[in-house]
Image (cartoon, rainbow, N blue to C red; front, side, top):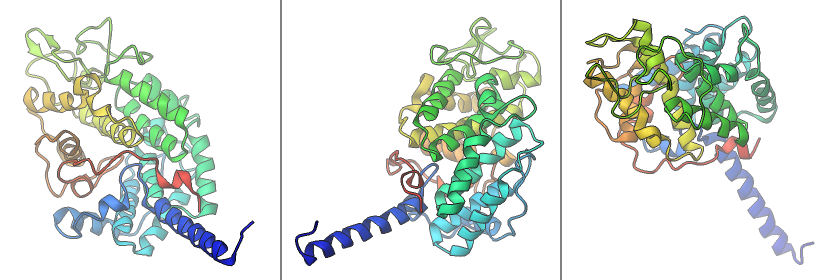
Length: 362
């Protein structure tokens, strides 16, 4: 097979380099961000200090059936700190947490699973699970997206709830799809998300509640279209199925926090789809996500507070906008720490790529 020992030696060197490269690639990830990108960020400042302090806390007990369990974003903090520092203890804690999360969805609702799962998937991608754990984790992910939880699944909730339930489930659904390198499922996620943003030709299978905040009740959408008005007031960018939680249409518009809750899941979907190759996602439906933020700020006079303060950092990063974005921010129900990981403006260094651990399992 090899004509000389020198050729054999060169082949072994190439193979070793490939294996080492694969190991590094598997650990850097790119579902949400990568070690290469994070390496450019400082290990100082208020954003880093808060995230590092969270990463240094005991992990706690993962519970995917508790929609308010903060363990998931703590595990994400540990994964981000590991990706930046290479300190193995953080990686070990992430691996243990991902394994401990398996099966804890029992007894919960899909809202809880949608909120909680995504952070563990991103964390696993960032640290790279060992072969045995990765096989177990992947097998569980294959099943959990179809798990019946009080009559719903992660997928069915994404496809029939055009509000915070659906967007959170969509975020976890697409994270799982990318982790599993399930291209058909990724395409389905993109189709539903585009429909949610307003493209009814892409997808229109949602079940809506009260339609009073819809610009066209006969053609309801997840985000009202560009230029939408009602009774002389702009409802361009309104998320009708969450804004309705404040009641019927009235002006000045009420500050309805469910809208920000829905945007948590919607932004997560956009980031993951962008990095999976849907590079135009931020422009879909006349920049629907940006218009949603503009309406909240310009019409509702409502800035993000509390566990929504990570969101404007993402919006500013991808759109080059300047919405108020406090530092340090607080993580959300599903993801967070973007005041560090997505500080500044996207300069094109976050080119979409297939996550490393989907190509090579250790």
